[in-house]
Length: 227
Image 1 (cartoon, rainbow, N blue to C red):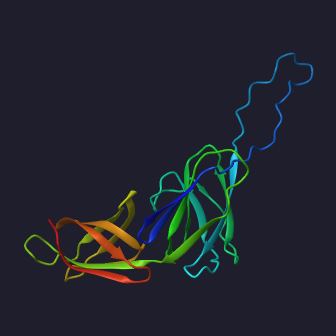
Image 2 (image 1 turned 60 degrees about the vertical axis):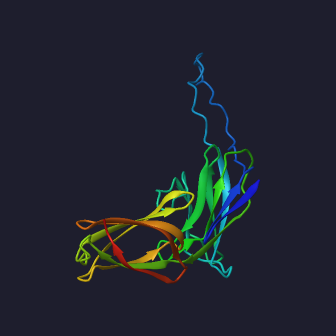
Image 3 (image 1 turned 90 degrees about the vertical axis):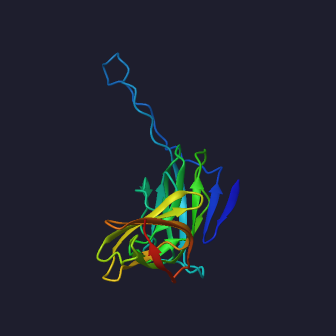
């Protein structure tokens, strides 16, 4: 079963019926001259072959992208599995634990591009998944001018940003510093539609819903009063 859920600029593909490869192996025998059976050995891990193709928005293969699999869909979780960087043909492969529910996407080590879709791979039996095509799009730029409760610039403050996905919750963190006018810019964040929460060290915080970040574009929220 494959199910697509539109997420504005992100799409979720559910891939079930995916296989796992049971590596061949033999049970150890008792040493010669020993009448006792060998100690039980732990079961060998079964794996699913997960071929991945990484392309840009025009469908052209992308090299030097890192395929990863995580246990939740958010974009910043430490990968459970990662494969080799894609070649000039955009191809790579993951060895996915066959008994684990995982989410597959690609990662740009240069932090210029972000995945526009990911795959949810369910535990199953078999040898491999079908090829999972990941489309990468350019990151977006988010800017705003922060004011404190007295409507004064939140100047020279460190600001934390958390982006919340409408379905999957906490999605991406970032950090920046305001200038003397309270202006802060987050240079490269995942495109899409999010609720964003900003928190300045001294001046307070604010949550803003429905923030649309186009690929390769900039969104300026203007003056934002913190509470």
